[in-house]
Length: 339
Ligand code: DAH
Image (cartoon, helix red, strand yellow):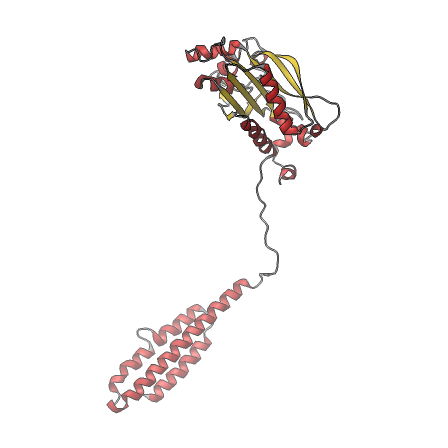
């Protein structure tokens, strides 16, 4: 029995050392220490060992079991390490890692945020309205007569049901006044659509920012002060603004606003950037008919409104020569605005 145990130990150590992969390791493990393995069988033979020899043989059996279990454990660890090393071979840990590009805002989003932020500081709240609009919200309520060229099928996208893609964000003036009583102070950025031939300065979809301020004692001075402050915040303290009389159906009087600033290429050039004016009483009357109350009684409330295109502003400010660049998603263009 003693010789049998000693040769079992030697055989086991040789088999364990010869193992080079996991399936072979499992076979050897089961062959020696499995439930029907050779060590278990040796244990069963203890019954036939003479009583006097049992303490010594028992001790030896225990030692052989410990040696074999220990050898199995360390061989398992060696196999694991070898497998990891094989997986990592060919990987050079001293090479620099893969850099992930961080995201950034589209230049138009960046500028829009900046614009909205300035108006928020003056107490204007963000407002919005639907892109698919009724003719009433887009034109009638804004005092735009049925024969106005903006309503022409050549200039506007109409849906079969008579609704249309809004041609300007002035619709948000109406949407807001329908649901909110004065005082109203809103800034409304959003998409506007026109049936324009796409070229370097026109897109069929572009972005407008609309503003509206209605209260009991709003004056033309408030309009001028607000827009002058806004453009100075955006373009710098040297900015000068000029209000040039114009016509819009929904404001009276109406102006086009020209701006001059070093940030806009400097020089003596006045750039036409926005339309604005005092809300025409006819607009308050349309809204009042809808609301069925006198919250917008045109004898009591006054307002000013303004609107401008974001793309045009961005083109001038960032020196972008072609409006189509904003929608082409060319990383070589867009990445120039990341910071
Ligand atoms: N809605 C006008 C346009 O698309 C821009 C505009 C002009 C908006 C004057 C206004 C305004 O609110 O008062 O050309």
